[in-house]
Image 1 (cartoon, rainbow, N blue to C red):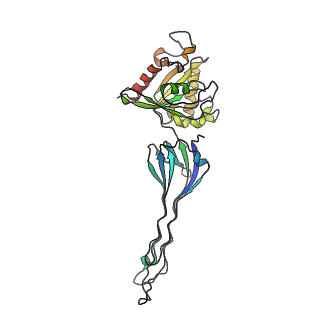
Image 2 (image 1 turned 135 degrees about the vertical axis):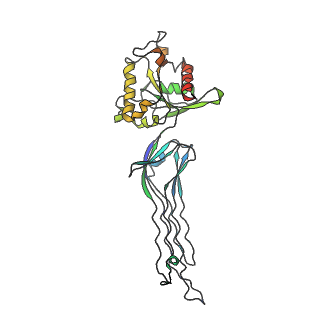
Image 3 (image 1 turned 90 degrees about the horizontal axis):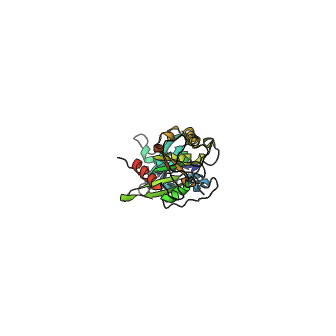
Length: 324
């Protein structure tokens, strides 16, 4: 199951309390204070892993807690530090503090680590409180509490090119045509229910990542259809490809609707570099293809099914991505 959003609670370990103790030996029955300091509480650390692609595990486990520090002991023995815990997340996860509503971190590279909750310091033992007027202090510090946080985890796919379009526009077919990705393809709406990524290999050892975003419909930013929860995956892309069905009755309105949904979700999305691509020209007899409301130089017409003009599209994308 693909899950791209979760909310969890995390707690670092509390510090151990300091000890109250006095040195006692046969010939030194009234030795000085020798209580050890408490150990430090464990931290909570987030780590990005390229081996993960979903936040599914966090639907079932909601609370994570590091180990507390141990209390200090006699003979100036310090308590052991609590063990830290590492929480692995997919690359592309954005972490937000739900109480402050502030973004804490953005895990964009494999192996990246972020200290999300710091363990509490251990309390000081009674030797720290000895003075010339009080040589036998009978108190010590309690451990300091560790950080507690409620955070949200939001997975956003990392891709260079994002395919955006209505259901059945042919996004999955195009991705499977130009990459080794094998998304599910069928002739009914909402075949794609998760973002699919494919790597396009180019000459001279260049490559880029293309994302097939589940289809949008009018009203998606308000929760209609299945596209709303995946609009966030478009935010990281460098270039958008608006993939439209050439057999549509009103292609100009289709493009306007797509841009309107994205603008309602995030106004910056429509400012990204983009290409307008019409698919399924294998279903059209007329050549050259003419589309009302669009100039020939502003669009690409392809057939993802047969491969017609797909190479020209890749050349244009390469030029935009690797332009100096």
